[in-house]
Image (cartoon, rainbow, N blue to C red):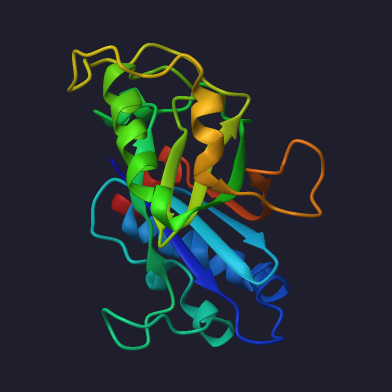
Length: 226
């Protein structure tokens, strides 16, 4: 099982979010997911910014292959391949890592994807990654099983699911230290550029709008493989 996080930006005044909500986009994406063994995909928006999460069994799977018509609404990112629309976000923290398809299967199929974004101070990025790797490897399974943080430049995208799934990880972490600060929120706060004009409680992690929530059942994937 592979997990992917990507970031994109809409072009100018074009309404990428409305376009991506169209039924034909949804149907085409579901067919692409079946072909490529993608079990679920969630797309979130923050104004003109887009954040994508998906999981697949075999790959690699590129975001362009799942949302091919989105290119018309998206700006090109510099670097890497010319004309790319989706910038990969680096997995810098996860509560659990999938060890098998069975381990990763949702027990609550009605759970909802939940996305948030935050901004790091550039000179605090290394510290943030350091603390989170320490946390991840000292205490695997300490939060929502499906919670993961991706980073691109100094933007953080936190994907999780509600209600949270809390269960022990089926593996040991890579660190046997116990250095994660107990006053975690206090230690983390100086790392962020806070948002202004947001609802109370979202000064650091601002909630995203869910645009697409697509899931392909085992039965439908099996029909495609038959």
